[in-house]
Length: 165
Ligand code: ADP
Image 1: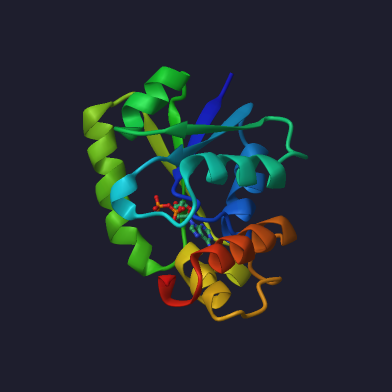
Image 2: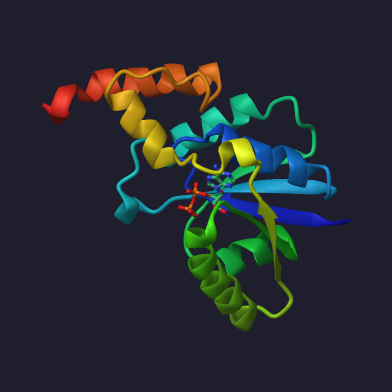
């Protein structure tokens, strides 16, 4: 049984992430979306909120499971019994960091391989950071995230208030 981990912050999940989730879920028996709990990154959504949102938008995918994690990715992979890490590659700017990460992970745990899926061309510009910026200025989010995510974003931004007052 081939089990893979697709790790990330998903703060929040975008159509770019969902494209990778859908495509990679067809390649493996079970896909675990690992939601990184890293307070140092100062996420907009708590890890519990990110897990809940991901569960909502992937509910039609039977072999996808959402699991929060903290600490080393290779340790999480070992705990889950997964020998494969999936990452998405957008542009050349992602490449250097991803190369370093995959080689480091391979050194730490030679039994874990990393596989890259290149982004769908229509999502190559898309990042969670851009989506949060558009939301903060009240822009139309419909091309970037599912409706459920847009609703959560607007709620969060309205609670935080303008300029975090
Ligand atoms: P991280 O903080 O680990 O980079 P992200 O949530 O930003 O977490 O991204 C998780 C994974 O999804 C990474 O492999 C990233 O390259 C990929 N990814 C992010 N945005 C897109 C996109 N628009 N298209 C394809 N892959 C993406």
